[in-house]
Image (cartoon, rainbow, N blue to C red; front, side):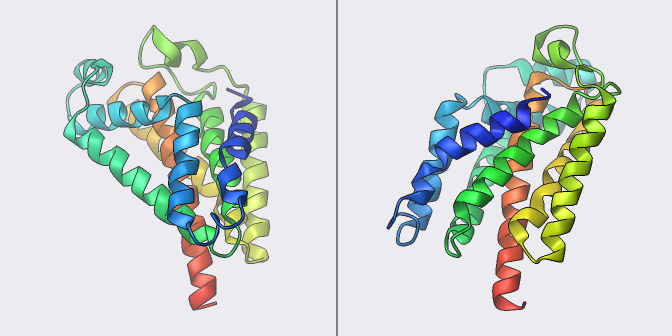
Length: 226
């Protein structure tokens, strides 16, 4: 999981190519945003979307950890999980559409995907247990050394600070990804007993979403009130 941010950068650079196509990135911003997210979904086989839905269904059940984990393992999609996917997708599309207008769509997409996957570094810190003894969560739990976690957090904090100081919302929003990851990890530990593969998927999608939304909000703020 230490290389998760780098992998996020690579797949974002590939899936974000439609954002660079002349014409599509101006007159068809919504269409281009949907295509970009769709390409990324195909590249990742929708694993993170599935993790988001399963995690939300499990946490929303309000049941003890053992029962909640069983809910997460079911193949069916619950209503709460479905709403979570639709909401996150809509937010990603709308935020990316806003960012295409000033010409920062491609950059924002790369930053969001990289920062969203940086949350996996924090989720695999030595202090975070796995909720199960099997599965992806168990395989990667506690696999990232603390110095690497601290370094990742410091780099992202510096990027965000520079973004704030220079009024560049795309960079300023970077820290939103790890902050979202921290909240999800905290809730997963309390309700499930630790991380699972589904929780990791939820961290990626929520992290990507909040970074895009924060960047879009910052862009609109500067445009209308800055």
